[in-house]
Length: 196
Image 1 (cartoon, helix red, strand yellow):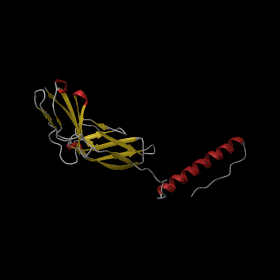
Image 2 (cartoon, helix red, strand yellow):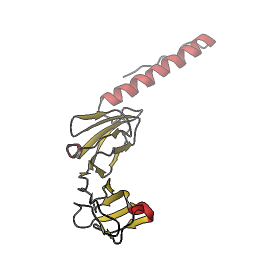
Image 3 (cartoon, helix red, strand yellow):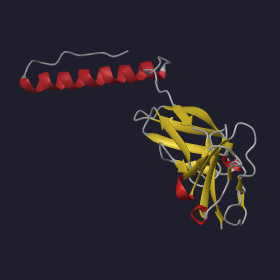
Image 4 (cartoon, helix red, strand yellow):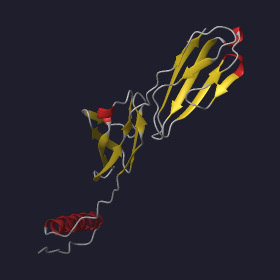
């Protein structure tokens, strides 16, 4: 295939021989790959993670395995960040997110993650106007099974039930009462109600 002719000895001829030999080796290598000898394997593993989110919160996405990232997802979502964030989550933003990852060797891989967006618990607190000595009746409203409640209010008031009462009310018990409600999907809602 290649014929190598010995040149007369001499400094320039010696260098020329080495140059010719280098290009012969290079040509053989290129010819070998062209004949179907596989190139070194392209190794890359993409990772993708997402978390459960609540309506109105932020969706946090995270990817790894490369240096170039291309995300796509529900509601026309696209990003080239490794760890993008979607603020103001809605139910429509839940679903499957896909990321394609590429490394310095131009190898690429794809991974997916599922994001769940949960509704906030219903909350509609009420309190009535009362006279001194009467009972203050509070109601969180909404909630449902598996719900926890945290009430706080004037004069050091606190309660962990949905509809607490304060007997023998005094003027110091009037004011703003706060309620935070949590449900089993991890979402919370807070509100206030005034009692006078």
